[in-house]
Length: 171
Image (cartoon, rainbow, N blue to C red; front, side, top):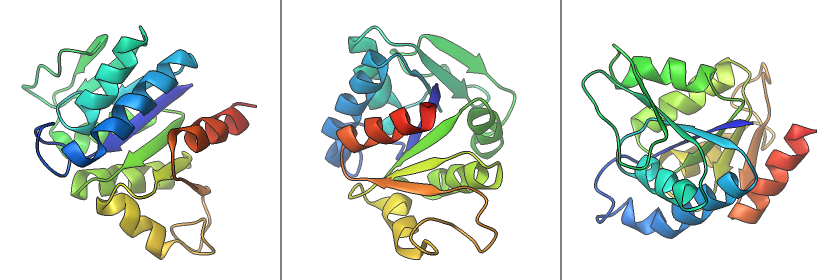
C-alpha cells in the first residue's frame, strides 16, 4: 500500500516534533519492513523522521514537495510540484491508499480533511497532540468527520495498532 504520513513540520530537535520523534522513527521503520511505500510532504518534522526510520529498513519514501523545496535527505523519490504547501497536499493524498496523522497543525488538518473528502481511510495516531488529537474529540459516533459518513476514521495508540489496522485494510 501507499501509506501517507502527515504531521508536524519544523526542526526535529525542538518541540513539538522532538516529542514524537521516537514514534515517527519506529513507525517509519515498521511500515518499511512490512513493504509499504511511504508518501509524505518530504520536508522536515514528522516527514523527515518517518523518512529516516523507513530508510533504516531500506524502505521507499516518496516526498511530494512544494515548489522550490528539495526535501529531506532520506527520500527515495522526490516529486517536485509547482504547488504551495496546501495545494501539493491534493497530490500527496491522491497518491495514497491510507493516511496516518501524527500531531500536526493546520496543514495536517487540511490533509486529513482532504483524505476524508476523497474517501481515503485515516488513522489518527492518538496522544501525539495537535490536530490529530483534536480530531479524536470531534468524531461522530467515534468514527466519522461528518454526518455523510464518507469513510471511517480509525484510531491507534501505538505502531502495533497502526500495523494491525493496515493489515485489515489490505485484505
